[in-house]
Length: 189
View 1: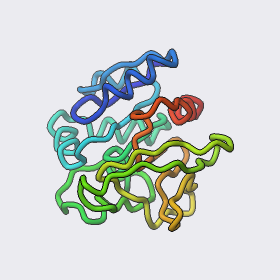
View 2: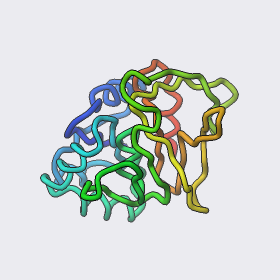
View 3: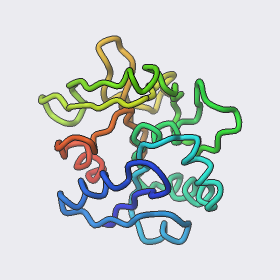
View 4: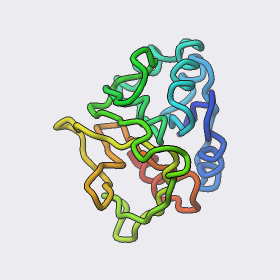
C-alpha cells in the first residue's frame, strides 16, 4: 500500500519520514499522474491558500476530488484539514479548495504564530494514552455534519480532529512528534 503525500508546499517531508519509520511506502504527489500510483493520500500542513493555488495550478483539484469521492482514504493535517473542508471561515472567498468534508474549518482559530501551543489530549480510537498535539496557526473544525465523527476536542469543546468515512482531518501536526499512533490510525482506515 503506497501512501501519497501531497508535496507542493508544507511539511510533507515530516510525514514521509514518519511513514518510512513505520514501514509504509510513500510517493510524493505533485502531478495528477502520481495519483494513479497511490492507495491513500496525506495533505500536509503548510499554508492553505498557497497549497490551494498550487493544486489548481498543477491540475490536481478535480483528480483529487474524484479519487476521494471514489473512496481513497485521505488525511488532511492543519492546512490539509482546511483544504478538505466544505466550508472555510476566515478564509479568502477565492481560495481553491477540495470542499469535500462536511465541516467548517476556521482558519487561524488561535491567532498568530505566537499563539502556537502543544497539548496532550485523548483521541477516539487511539487508546487511553493522550496524544501530544502541536498547534501552529491551527484551524478548528466547526459545524460538523451528521456523518462526521469528532475524534478529539480541546477542553473548551472545540473539535480538533474528525473523520467522515475515508476522510480524516486533524488541526494539529502529529508528524512533528515521535508518536506514530495517528499515522497508524490513518493506515488502518
